[in-house]
Length: 467
Image (cartoon, rainbow, N blue to C red; front, side, top):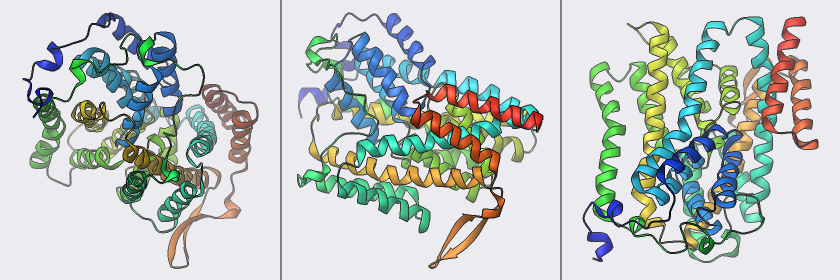
């Protein structure tokens, strides 16, 4: 083995290229990015690109996109993982931990506070109206995500075929989400390895094109710093520690409370989610909605939309909606604890088992991926996953649309498959009007997501209060 693989554990922190970026300054920059990280993964990645590449010039375009491509291949929220990856590139292990944790913290605190308001005041006319408007706006935002990712990912008929097959598999055949995405990844890997032209391309959330900042013109430079070279001993040690931190609470809950306790189920389900939810935040939400609403019955479709509205309107990853799901599940089903105490513990537990694995994937794989820039097999897998995700998000948009615009939904058998179809007579006309207004604002006038969300929330509140 080479010296890079057999070096002692201290090497990643000892052999460190001095790029002149003080760690204290980096902490401030990561806190700034976290406070501005509204708008879903595309908006969050754009903020990171603007600040880290264009403004600070700490890393270059090529290294940024390579890190993004790796994070797109991982299960979980790619924007948070990208922050951890770049933090690790700049300031080793502590940099990755701080960058990844700061990216989550503001959203966690904001959604926790809003969850309290939701369960305590959610049935007052004002709060009901705010969430009524948010649901309509969220529908427009999800449709925009379909259009945005689709415009970048579906460059040829093969990719369009992946998207169509993923949509049919989930919406019509009720196929498991992980199977759909993993199948696409395998096909894309094979296509990329064979060098087929259809499988060349990048991710669906990449930054907008503009003046390229080359790696050689940045603080980190274009070389490979010693602390990011493959080091098997360090990777095994850090991976083992993170694996213990992730799974120890899950195992303890299983043996102490039993498999049927709500906390055990929360820990188990969201740990499974952390391993299989490839394809970005909206794909994750499709899987969570499918399981949390349909399988576990922790919340209703409308409440899932409320949670997404909270996640869309607060900083941090959209996957923070899982925190809202865990909060409601523990609030309603936990025994022996005051409901709000149980709900708080449920939110913390959900966040823990959702995000600790994100650090595991980064620290375990990033040193080996960093030396594989330009690998066409990985590029092919990424292209196929991103195309399949378009179909998954389309399914999510349709699911949200049915439950937002119609008051009654019924299961209907079509060609042997059972589909949830709306009862047309139950159309919610005010919700339709608000959704159309949100769509016009987003697509026609290019108004930002936050103004659209807050504007629709205000209109929804006005409608409920004065109808």
